[in-house]
Image 1 (cartoon, rainbow, N blue to C red):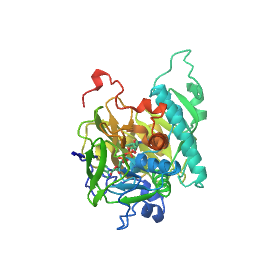
Image 2: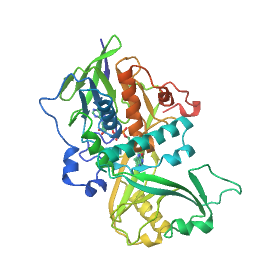
Image 3: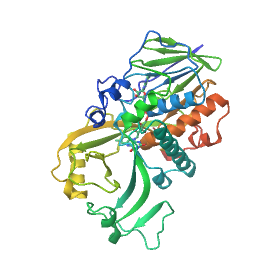
Image 4: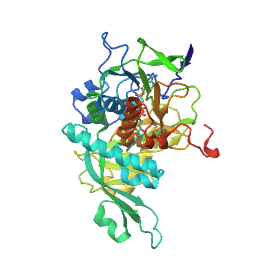
Length: 399
Ligand SMILES: Cc1cc2nc3c(=O)[nH]c(=O)nc-3n(C[C@H](O)[C@H](O)[C@H](O)COP(=O)(O)OP(=O)(O)OC[C@H]3O[C@@H](n4cnc5c(N)ncnc54)[C@H](O)[C@@H]3O)c2cc1C
């Protein structure tokens, strides 16, 4: 028998309010917040078909997909509250149309599939995720080369056309417009998934596994042992002592404002981050990337800089009161691509980790891939893009 101890995950582990200050709790009813903290019952199934560890968007979407695939007994355990880390602090843009600029083609295709799963899920549950369609404008401070003609669905917007696309915007030379992208409310999405993903328990921390003959035979937790048929580790980073692809955290900051007196026509992506307007007029902006900063809590200097960028970009926003300032940690890998694979050395455990800046977008398809694999017994072909053993360029291979 071998024991594997999980290393503590997110640097904010143990803090009482991991995404302290985020705007999202102020955008939902108390019933949504209550759904994200069900607590733990004495009657919790200790031997479920699948135990999912981690109640961020990836764990919740995996539990939902397992139930959809017919798995009867799915239990999810979460150390804090559901969606209380990156998943509850994200900007929550759903922008599959921009992924070909950033990701390998196979990952960009997964992003499209994931968005479609999310749209269908939202329709099935009567709009419970807070999904709103929006066009997304990437505003550039430099001109694009003559003849640069992006592939659909991206449209090139030259200087003369920028004011038609977004009259409030200043300082951008040109842009790339992708129509029909979307935004979700991350807490509504998480609560809707939790309602359809078996039984979730909060305040339960996994500490490690007992492994015998290549199988996880017991999961040790703060609330006793579980003996599940299969295990999915969805803890942001794997927490495994030696992941094959080095993992890292990328701290990000966002701010929220009081309602603006104008209505943006589009969501904005800029070199200084994103701007999205909520249905009630409030603006959410930021999305800084601080590699290696493991300090917990929002830095006031950084959030002031985000507010200053907003005022430059949208002069009409100058003077808006900043009501929320927060930060959280993107779980990331050395090469910037997530993992969804078996836990090395086991045949009944899987993990997904490192979704970096697109985990809200990628949750649905990742959950689907893992559910297909667990239920069908074979690795789905499209999971190859998220494999542990993909080659990682040498200059990215150190943590
Ligand atoms: C500033 C910012 C903006 C972002 N904007 C977007 C965006 O616009 N669109 C988008 O798609 N993505 C966005 N992201 C990225 C997205 O938030 C993440 O990729 C995603 O939330 C990761 O989800 P996860 O479930 O893997 O991890 P997490 O949300 O970190 O969830 C992991 C969970 O596992 C739990 N856990 C860890 N260890 C244990 C244990 N031992 N036992 C029990 N539970 C455990 C943790 O408590 C945590 O709740 C943004 C991120 C940041 C920081």
